[in-house]
Image (cartoon, rainbow, N blue to C red):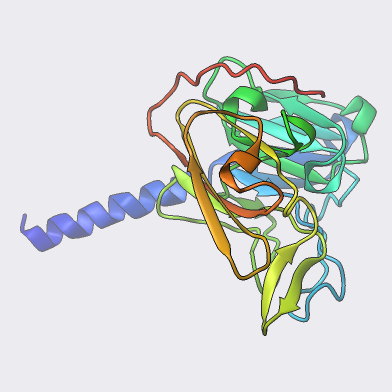
Amino acid sequence: MNKKQKLAIASLIFLTSLNAFSDDLSMTLFSDVFFGGNSVEFHGEIRVDEAYEPGASPNREYYDHFSPVGVDRASSIRVEDKYCAIVASGEHFDGVWEMFGPGEYSSFLNINNSISSALTYKKYNSSCNPAVDLPVLYEDLNFSGRRYPLGFRKGHLTPEVQSGYWDSIAYDDADPNESGGYIASEDLRKTRNGGYVVSGGFSSMASSLTVPDCYEVTLAGTYDYREYRTHTFGPGIYPDLRLFNMNDIIWSYDITRIPECNKPEVIIIPILM
């Protein structure tokens, strides 16, 4: 076998592994209790929390990001083996959170018909707990106020949902250990100096951060849309982002997870469900 043939086979194996990753079913939401009604499938690790409004940008159109189930309609859930899921009653992970490990759950009970945000991620521990599984931003100092989970964005939905000019709900990247994106933004982009910048949602709100073992997080933001700042955080707890000049300015992130790292450090932070 010559070098060219070996490269071709290696490329085929690489592409096959990517497709297997992106097509891995992680969660199914149903519009009715007991797995009835319409459904939408989540494949791979994906965060769905943008709520686009008509007129928010000249390049965007409104869409239902949980179609065909519908925003504020989901009432039951199936989470696949080796996955965890977060669902939240508010847009951009505001409101009440519920955590689900692998299994079937015939009702959301207190938050039926109110799911506006969802995130799936690979299950690395014996239980599913976002405080120790994922990096999390908090609105206020000392890990209080609203929370925003920093998940990967590698998966896709079935049926596919497109969001217009900026981000698509379909993500497919070469490295399943690295991914990031914009922090949720509800009125999306404001025109400034001929371009668009992120605003609203959870953008420019974060004041503290937790990073579990096996993760590295790079945060980026700006005070005045001219001075661009970034900072990379290793595993640990960061109760005051003012110490890094990153308080209330963050609007995008990148996260990296060390491959084959299966023993995250336990970080005890109260999470109200």
